[in-house]
Image (tube, rainbow, N blue to C red; front, side, top):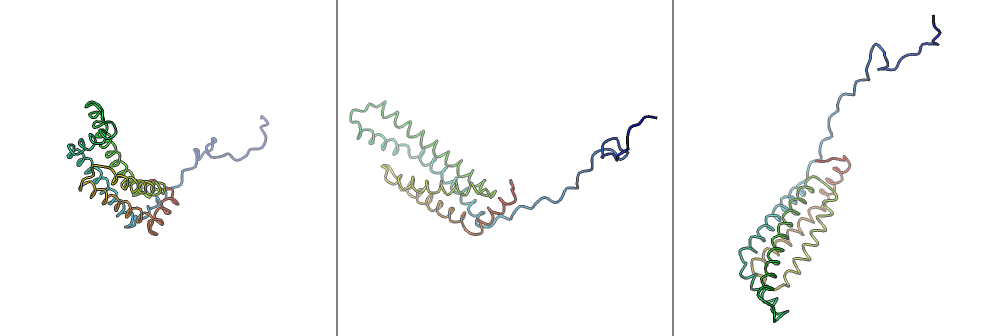
Length: 189
């Protein structure tokens, strides 16, 4: 007989007859996502409309290249009366490229903001507000530039109206409650 000392109860999984670690608790119901209010749903739809409007703006730019080229040429000649045709062509190419790239970036930002605000991301509401303010400033500055056509003015005005309406919808009481509920649940939708 060996003297091993007193026998203590064994922990589960430590050679006991029951063996193994305790079973995990049964899964409980997942927290339900807060219901998206109509203010957010409308703002999201308007953001998609803003993306379509930005895409339309790119198409209008490409469709009115002659007017665009004339405007750029006049502008270059006003600043440099000795400008060569290659300088003018380069300015036109840069202008077209910038218009298309910025227009497509605008489409992407509208879609991204629609997606993230629809999910109830508080940071997206703040960022959408900043983008809305920048949209207003740059659209107003655009009205002072030469070569504005009736179509581009109409697109600009509609764009500004969209920005204002969207920001107002994002900051309404129901929207704030939605953002807070999503944040409180730590939900990733």
